[in-house]
Amino acid sequence: MKIFKNKNFLLLVIARLVINFTDSLFYIICIWYTSKTLSSPYYTSLAIFLFLMPETLLFFIGPIIDRLNPEKILLFSLSIQLVLLGILVMLFNELEINLLLAIMLLSSFMSTITYPI
Image (tube, rainbow, N blue to C red):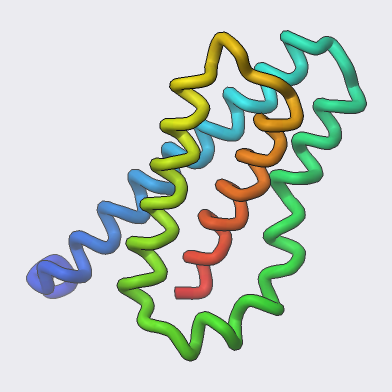
């Protein structure tokens, strides 16, 4: 197939598939954690809201992305998400809900910012 002869395109598709899978898994685990650990519908709904909020604001991000280098945006976004995941792993036993919600919001924003690219 002609599409897969372009190595850069193939790498981009594979990277996006892996990132989408890990993002989905991350949010499922975070929402499960908030619902199981806290047993509070308030925090669970707040976690879902924070997860979905960046998607509703995506139209504000488009003009900014048009002015920047797409490759740098992808690398920056992935780097930030890896740092946030590292913070969660390091603080897992001492995790507070406010930190988890903030990390969910930032990670969701970093993930959403790559979609227009």
